[in-house]
Image (cartoon, rainbow, N blue to C red):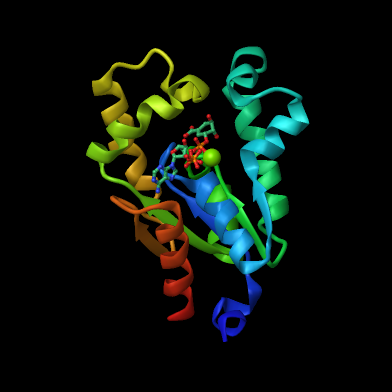
Length: 176
Ligand SMILES: Nc1ncnc2c1ncn2[C@@H]1O[C@H](COP(=O)(O)OP(=O)(O)O)[C@@H](O)[C@H]1O
Ligand SMILES: O=C(O)C1=C[C@@H](OP(=O)(O)O)[C@@H](O)[C@H](O)C1
Ligand SMILES: [Mg+2]
């Protein structure tokens, strides 16, 4: 039942702003669906042998984005996976197109107010947020919502636990 409605076992791709829970929810979803979990940031980190903040410093954002695109193009063509993208991945048209074509794209949304409560958990490890004022972060948050408009389903995550979010993703798919 669940398998059938999970759309021919297409891979699930999680998108959304930094800190909304793509990595955490993705791992939970993969456990529940018995699928392989791939966190694209983790794969990029393995390739460069350093975390994203160091990649940005040493190689530059362009090199990070190039590798991000290559890896997403490769993994999104495989079936039966759960892929968590980085929040900037959908800035690249090629990434959006390949994911929308081959996968089920799930946008995890979180209000600006609740994001502000979570930012302290992520700020040190997200190079894109470094040195930004609160106003600049809010601007980035709003600008980025436009790129997340390309998706198959949205799950609002305000006031929801990781389990709640994972459950809702599965529920929405089983109704597709
Ligand atoms: N639904 C949630 N409720 C509370 N905290 C969460 C939730 N989802 C994720 N978090 C926490 O927010 C932080 C960022 O989560 P993460 O999965 O790394 O986000 P992303 O991959 O979207 O950047 C982590 O500390 C994580 O434990
Ligand atoms: O939004 C972005 O530009 C980025 C988001 C990060 O991933 P998360 O969305 O998992 O934090 C990571 O890919 C990198 O720091 C850049
Ligand atoms: Mg992540």
